[in-house]
Length: 251
Image (cartoon, rainbow, N blue to C red; front, side, top):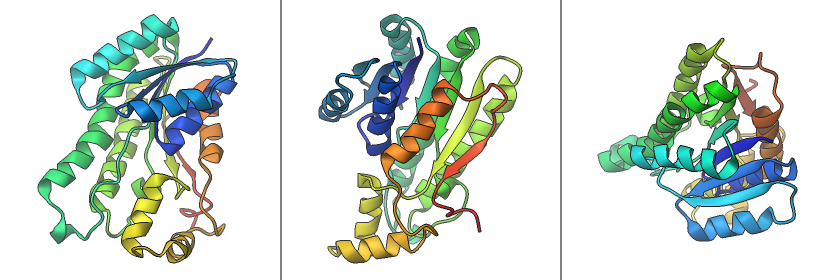
C-alpha cells in the first residue's frame, strides 16, 4: 500500500490531494502547522478506503522534518512518496517596499522546506523505490510583478527539483515538480485582493484575464494529477516540470 507524506495539507491543493490519495487507498501523513485545518482535511477524507493521519509540524525545522519522516515510516508502515507542497505567497508589493525579513520568510517556507523534505525522505525512498513531487507554480516558469519573493522561491523549487532528479536517476527515486496555474484557493484570492481591494468581481476578472482558458483552476483538478504522479506515474518520468495551468505558460 502506498504511504505518502503531504505537506501544506491544510491548504486548498494540499487538502484536495490528501482526499484524492485517500480515495485511491493510500495511507497519508497530512502535515501542516494549522491543527484546525488538519481536522477539516481529515474530515473531508472520511470514508475513503485509505487512511489519513494528521501531523502538526514546522517543515522549516530540520529536526522536526527528520522526526516527521520517521513518524511516517512508523505510522504508515513505510514511505513510498513525498509531496512537498507547503508554501506561502508572502508580501504583495513591488520590490522596494518588501522587507528583507519578509523575503527571507518566503524563502524559508517555500524553499528550505523542500530541501529538508528531500534531504530526509530520499534515503528512505531510495530503499522503497519511491517518488518525490514538489509544488512550484507557473511563477516558477515565468515572471509575475508584485510577488518577487514568491517568484524567486518557485524558480528555486524548479531548479532544486531538476538537480535532485539527476542525482537520483538510476537510484529508484523519481523527482518531479508540479507548476499549478492560478487556482480557486485562499492564496490566489489574497493576491487578487492586493490587485483590486474589496472588489471580488474585478479581482476575478483580472486573475482570469491571465489564463487562456478563461477561468481559475479547481484544486481537485490539480490534485488528481498530483495523486497520479505520486502513485502511478512511470519510473521514466523524472526531472519533469509539469504545468497544470489552463495554457498560461503555453505562449
